[in-house]
Amino acid sequence: MSNGSLSSETSPAVLILLGPPGAGKGTQARMLEERFGMVQLSTGDLLRAAVGAGTPAGLAAKAVMEAGGLVSDEIVLAILKDRMAEPDVARGIILDGFPRTDGQASALDALLAEAGQRVTAAISLEVDDAAMIARVAGRYTCAGCGEGYHDEFKQPHAEGVCDKCGGTAFKRRSDDNAETAKARLEAYHAQTAPLIAHYERAGVLERIDAMGDIDAIAGALGQVVGRVSA
Ligand code: ADP
Image 1 (cartoon, rainbow, N blue to C red):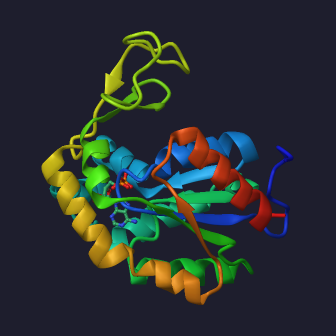
Image 2 (cartoon, rainbow, N blue to C red; image 1 turned 180 degrees about the vertical axis):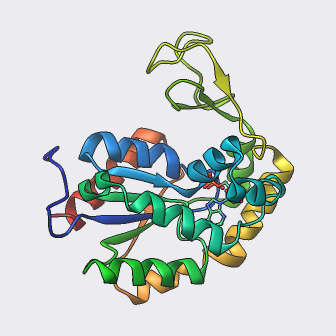
């Protein structure tokens, strides 16, 4: 399979990763970035950056995120639109954690239509709920490069040293605990899972079994992305 960029000047690929918290959207999006030269857009990361910077949007989002609820469409859309105005999106985008509601899905369709684009594929990472709580509650990332790890399933090869960048500082999200993870899973089922049917009707849905190991899932995902972007 080619490693070339999936984008062209006229129609950069627009991929959506759907799946509950802990399904591996972030990990897989980062692997797709490396492999296909596309850009990962994570509304979770953008919101955490806004919280960290103390912007008005961040201040409004903080408590909702800590409770495991969904931030308002208005805030999320404003943040996403800003990010989509950056030139690197011309390489093609992988939306990770967006859209999460009907309103966001419609807004995305409208935003893309303005630019003569549409969703290339919405890829649903299919997993068991019960396993998700365990995954989310044990995960952490390298503070330097963002590589993801897990207390039980994926420790760095050398204890305390990031495999990827050699960094020795790690961080955990404050919402990655069992209680908040449960609330996030509930929000996913109530508001986001129905989008699977939306994209199925639009004829762009792809399903991936995401219960296996990270490399096997990446392999299956890479095949789908290569096919839909060809
Ligand atoms: P995960 O997929 O593991 O839940 P994210 O990093 O995508 O993690 O999101 C973390 C939190 O940020 C969510 O629980 C929610 O509060 C907020 N958030 C992220 N993306 C959106 C979105 N598109 N709409 C509303 N809230 C969002």
